[in-house]
Amino acid sequence: MMSEQVNVLVADDDRDIRDLISFKLGQAGFRLRVFDDGTSALAGIEADPPDLAVLDVMMPGLSGIDVLRKVRGEERLRAVRVILLTARSRDADVDAGFATGADDYIIKPFSPRELLHRVNAVLARQRS
Image 1: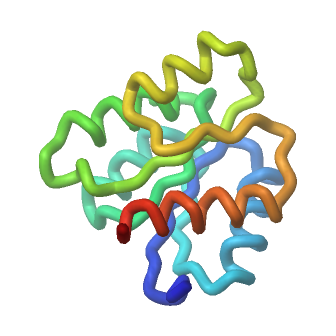
Image 2: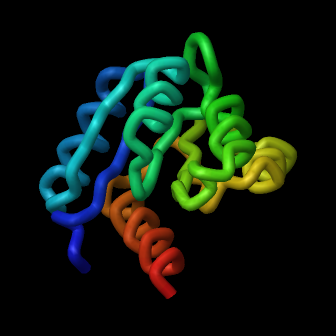
Image 3: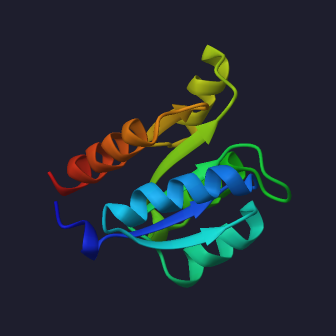
C-alpha cells in the first residue's frame, strides 16, 4: 500500500486516543492532520479534503456524526472516506453511523493493529 501518499485526518477529544492513533498511523507512513474537536476537524476537511477521516463520535462542538453528515452533504467532499470511533456499541448507534454514511465504525477500546487494518481496508475499497 502506498500509505505515504495518503492524507488522513484524525479528530478525537481524548489526547491519549489521538496520540495512539497518530503513532500507529504515522508509523505506517500516513500523512496526518490531528484535531481535538469536531468544529476544527470539519474546517480542516473543508480546507484540504483528506483521503480518510477518523472521527470520534462524541466530541465537543460538532460530534463525529455531525461532521460526517456535513461531509456527505457536500458534493466536493463525498469522496472522503470516514471511519467513526466510539465507545457507543449499541446496535442502534452503529446503525446510525452507517446510515449517516460512515465507511466503517470502530468501537473503543480497539487495538491499534485493528485500526490500521480497518484503515487499509477502507482505502483499498475506495481504490477498487
